[in-house]
Length: 439
Image (cartoon, rainbow, N blue to C red; front, side):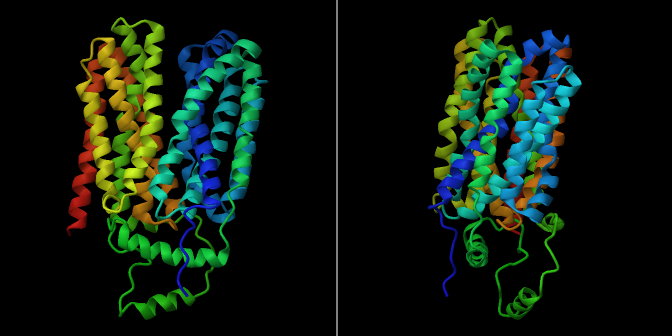
């Protein structure tokens, strides 16, 4: 019988909507709660750096608990993990509304909510890869658009809630909103097991033909005359149990190349948007206009991600999606470098437009490239390990940039440094991929 491919539609569009919401909450929520920081500073008599640790802990949990999430998904499946994650994320914010000191906030809003969002984010991407194959680049681009959409919505909403109900009431309502993660988890319906087995065969065959052969031969591989019998025998052997975390992906050269490139990328990628507002203020831009610069990036980002997903899905582009990802990173890095000396508002607006385009391209392609390298069956383990490694880069890059600004009192050098790191990651990915493909 002909193998059944992932539906590439149908219920998959509902799964895509759920992934859109989860991605929005996961990436936008740590930034959106910053509107409450001034009130928290007054109530708890702490400094800005103390309150900023709430967002940092949240992001550290999102990235650093990747392997734990991978183990849970491999053991229990995506839907149960997401339902538990939604409850944890909501409980964290609700409990945070009753806290009496900053340490309790770290444990509730930081650790508990961060862990809950991590348990939602990773499984939603895994389910997206299960339901989409040929349209997967477009699906990834649309799902990634959730981040800028939610950021542009949650920040103003947080300000309104703060003015009407105070930070405690705002946290309580935000906790209620996070219960929508449970709804998103509930729609992550696993494919029929019989269909899933056929889909796995079709997925491996399709990826072998269409995707990047970066890592050499996959574990399943393309069967040859000599290897067919061995492969059949291997498949007939009863499984002793699911692997909690598949470390065999480290034998895939493509995965190693991707991971190193992403680590270098994350060192510099988030630095410009974090420092942008203060940089603008130092050049004499009024506060309201300086804050509007981030809105420009978000608005452009909303359209850049789906558009890039559509381009990545073209037949003549998809086999070379790693090079498109490399171009996106190069574009982003050069934007940082070329804009380092911007000294007026017009120059900063131009920077934001180009940064929004390149940042959106990177966001739309990052997980598509990883899926192409390791395949959908090993993606749950791969993304967990990649996120863990990225967590170290997140904790190194932006804080180091902040210390350099304090020491040098010069934003220009920071933009040059961040841009150079992003360019280096792009060059490394392109060159290493080319050399690996031509061995």
